[in-house]
Image (cartoon, rainbow, N blue to C red; front, side, top):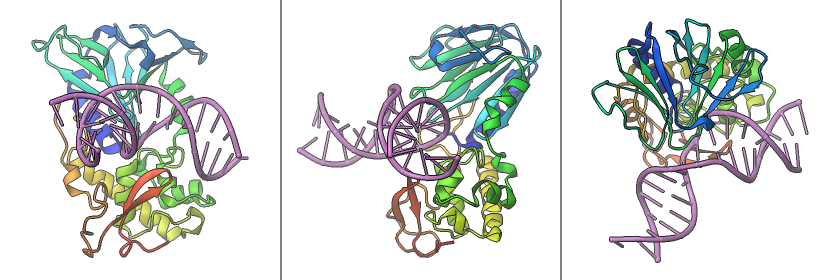
Length: 283
DNA sequence: AGGATAGCCTGCGGGC
DNA sequence: TGCCCGCAGGCTATCC
């Protein structure tokens, strides 16, 4: 389940393979995963040209959990991995023609390497825009500040008046972009905040502590290559190891790493949530 | 209008 | 052993 750290690791592992490299051809096996827009924002049929065929990739951006490959032509392909999406680069000599059932789009890069968007669950997808501006003006304008740079003031501004649980607030991508179920639970445990606490009851100094913890938890996870809980691997096919450091996620009913009490598991903000009833007091 | 809910989709693990 | 069901969950559309 790629959240910000996994997506950032995918970005970094893609860079050496694609930067400055021309896209020789694009095969679209499942057009339904592609949403292509023109300069007027009108939806257009998915085509190799809109997915950067003939262009050279100049940079890969990330905001929250989304990537964007920016080409020399100005064209942009935004990649969202959803739950099970992968961007993998394979070497030319290996399976040059074969593609798996869930390989939806394959880019052949100059030199012969292939980059594949693979997503069994299809919660992810690709969004093509004619320019970076159109991406930012439409799709990315709905996102809050990137979670790696989130501040207490930013959280307070976006969520301070909300009656929702703080866990639900952290998962709201329009408030802060990049936090998912794993790192929401880990961050709340880190500062000892009950995930069911209503946002409106959180004081500014606690928002500051939470923002700092979100940044710390995400940065640490990036350093460990992200969390491989199900199928996540980076562009080179390498798994992460951050899952071995999870204090609460996936540990409901087990002993708290801090107090050795039993961790609670329940549903908060429509998501499975794990927390320590002793270490995480309200507010 | 904010917040809760349903639905999308497949793989996997538990239970029978 | 094999089948069925439930669960995993990011995000959008829809309902309340």
